[in-house]
Length: 382
Ligand SMILES: Cc1cc2nc3c(=O)[nH]c(=O)nc-3n(C[C@H](O)[C@H](O)[C@H](O)COP(=O)(O)OP(=O)(O)OC[C@H]3O[C@@H](n4cnc5c(N)ncnc54)[C@H](O)[C@@H]3O)c2cc1C
Image (tube, rainbow, N blue to C red; front, side, top):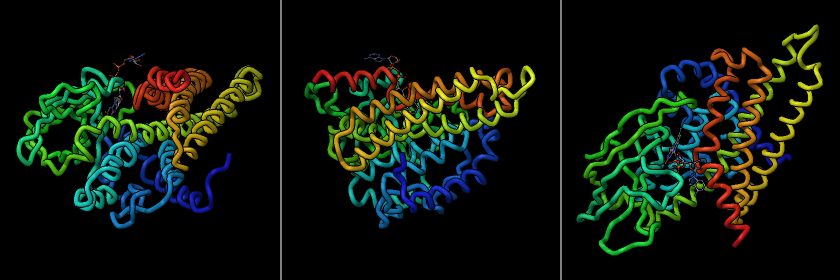
């Protein structure tokens, strides 16, 4: 399924050489450190990789959604799920809140630095009490003069330890009884804001180069002009940006799976057993054929959702299906690719081992597979 034009492919070449030169040689070191050095962001900014769709007046590239898709495919080919995720959060899960709903002065103030990679972004929705039920957010915001005062905490925040700008969901309290999702509002919070604190950096199964942190807000005073969009409509904005996040997750799952399959093909061609290469055994060949078929199905579903979304059509079910299918598909690919590597697949020195740990997140983060099924079922039964 060919959806990219010549310009997209040229962009892909720029990215591929950047990833091969500036990312892949450092992945092990970043995994061990538990963080990606902040020096990577200005380098990406200089190459025009951090605001591909944003208006040129803010330092963006003014390109289309398919260019963004190329960005995420190539980042995910790096064999570092952490790197792909960190980029995805900055470009397509956090900063769209500013681009889509921020006031003009706020956009003029922050977007150029975001595009240049001088300010790293994080999105803070999930709380210790739950992530799937966004309407249950407990972080409170109370208006006091020309500020909102926020109290609460956030959990599992990607780029959480290192970010400069946090897009925080909080419930604005005005005394009246609200329906569960009403009152939720989005705020742009600078790291230096009094009352803001980064808590523990969390120790994870996979995505180990990505810093995942807890955040705490204690009487955190956020200027009222940092409210994004209208007060009380944040729930809908979170859901709107989730569509983009889930498309990116689908692209990640497919690209990570393709890379793992390529690595596995190379391995089974080389590895000898019972007098010949593993690739000669019919069971192995059929397994590879099965994985390739699943990956292509995931790609087709994701591209179809992407094209609908690009055309401005309602694509919530299609995006949820793509996220669900690819997040489950990558689990199968991870299991089988490790299996085909035998004992070596269980060793840290093989990238396939890291892939299997990174892949596990994809059916949890950005909306679990169960939540994707709920969304799809709701539309079916509407
Ligand atoms: C590494 C990592 C990075 C993350 N990065 C971010 C980030 O940058 N920003 C952010 O805001 N969040 C982030 N998250 C949070 C992530 O989005 C949540 O973990 C996810 O949405 C699930 O929420 P939860 O962990 O609270 O699980 P819960 O909501 O407690 O769910 C637990 C289980 O119950 C199931 N379940 C829940 N409700 C239902 C239902 N109605 N029907 C059936 N099953 C249900 C879920 O599917 C899941 O299997 C990250 C998480 C991880 C692990």
